[in-house]
Amino acid sequence: MSATVWMGYLIDHHDDFTVVQSPFVLDGVRVFGADSDATTLAVAALLHRLQNEEVESISVPEGVDGLSLSMATGVPLHSSEGETSPAWDVLMSDEATVVLARHESDVELTSMDVEVQADADFHHAMQQAWDQELSATHVSQGAYVSRAQYEEAGSSRLSLTGQVADEGLVWPPRFNHMVDGSTAANRNLQRTGRVQTWTTLSAAGAPSEFSLRAPLLGGISTVLLQLDDGPKGVFLTVDDEDALFEMEAPMELVVRRLYAQEGFIRYGLKARTVYD
Image (cartoon, rainbow, N blue to C red; front, side, top):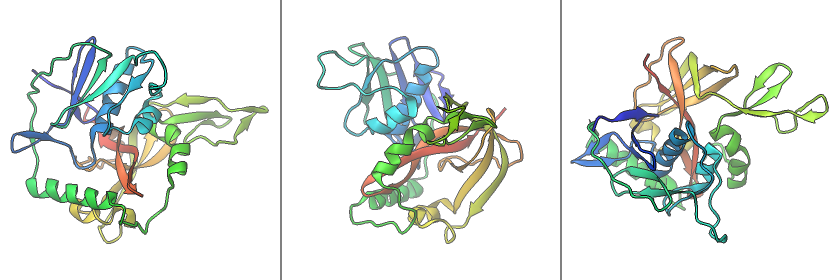
C-alpha cells in the first residue's frame, strides 16, 4: 500500500487500529531510526488517532514507556487493578512496528511501500552507543535530571503545554505563575514553528550526555523555533534525518529519545523539517 508519512514514520490508519512503522530497512528487516523506539512510534500513533477521536485509556506492553506515552499525549494508562478493560491497546511487532488497536479488535498488518535503506555500520554503532548509555555502569558527566524531575516536568514539555499569561502564551509553564490571583490556564500548543537560528556543536563540543553518540552523528544540532502559537524554544533536531537549516524554514516537533541516565531513557521534543 502507499504509505502516509506522519512525524517521520509510516502510518496506516483504520477505524479500529493504526499501524505505525519505521521507514528504515536493513537487510530486508524494518529497524528503528537513530533516536526512535517502540515508545516514540506509539506516541505518534496515539497523536494521529487523537486528531479525530478521544481515547479514554490505553494499555501498553513491556518495552513501551507508558508514563512517557501518557505524558506526551494526555491519555491515561489503564489500571490493571480495575475490573474494566482498556479502551485501546498498544501492540508491538518484531520489525520496528507498533499498532494502536481498539481493545479486542482484529488487526491486519499491511505491507508499506516506502523503504529507506539504513547504513549498517551507522545503525550498529548507534545501537551499541545506546546500549552502553543505558548500562547501569554508565555515568554521564552532563546535566543530571533525576527521574522525579523528569516526571514532574515531562508532561508540559512532551505535550507542548503552554500557559496563558499577561504577556501571551508562555512555554514551558511557570508552575507558580498567577494571573489576577488565580493559577494561569494551560493550553496545548501547535507542534509547528519556523527556524529563527541554529547551532551545530562539534562532537568534541557537545554536552557530555551525548558523548557516545555525537561522534557518530557528526555533532549535535539545535534550532531556535518561533512556534506558530507564539512562544520560542530551543530544540535538538532529529538524529535520523537531515534538517533544513534556513531562516523561516518550517519544522514540526516530534517525540524522540534524548539521552539515557540511570538506565532509563529521557524522551523529549525534537525538530524535523517539514517541506512545503
